[in-house]
Image (cartoon, rainbow, N blue to C red; front, top):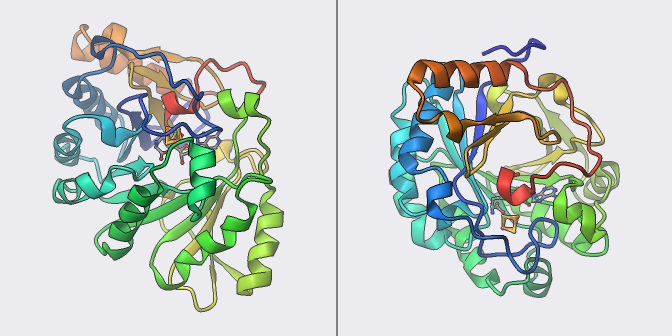
Length: 321
Ligand code: SAM
Ligand code: SF4
């Protein structure tokens, strides 16, 4: 559908849990998060019902995220059902990869179209310092499975952090040399733990020139379609894969933002930086017509552009990145 500022909204990110098996310093407090009961999070049937309404409103792509989405039971069955919804063209997943070895096969047979693997380092020590957990070997297993999988669109997402993983960006980017993956650098967003942790991102221009110094000219790649999102992609000569940059703060792309987010507790959030939206859960008992209308109205009023002042009460692990 088209919102009040003429943007086509066709992409929904659905968080299926806010629990996680890692504790990334920029995302989650060391002590974890207050456990919300199963009754408080949307059931898979409820997620499906909302997704069906999203699809009727013009959503074509759904990304399942978290917390860590692979901790949610019966995720492959949800993927299969979402894929069967008319008008949903793509169902994808964002994961930290710890449980990929266990679930990759099932998810692929359920019809999953793509995986974004969040990976900030290829060094075991930096991994455990940053995530506060020793699951590096499991994540590497997941990475290997993805690199060998030709049917999926694979992206490797890295958040460059000054003094933490500066030296890792080149190694991660080099994964795109012989693999048809997109390695993307994502700017640190000043939300929740990231705001409080004192962690600092690295400007895209600096990363760009480090990459060019090492791999030669980064040739820009044109976007193929409107579902592709805000990343700008480049390919160094001799690379089969691509390198992407998402820097929402440095380059505001709100004017072409096509996305909405649904939290595990059923809050429909239409902009990363504002807490306005709709408590969908409240209306789940309403008839389809009322629920549809409330969701339509909320999406229509999506804010014009983001403004980060540290006041949003939502953390990244609730809104799924
Ligand atoms: N647990 C899954 C994972 O890590 O891929 C999915 C949820 S996680 C919140 C989704 C993405 O958000 C990850 O790629 C993570 O690096 C990113 N993220 C978390 N906090 C962030 C922040 N403050 N700024 C930028 N990206 C952040
Ligand atoms: Fe968990 Fe993902 Fe947040 Fe890391 S970024 S703590 S893996 S939700």
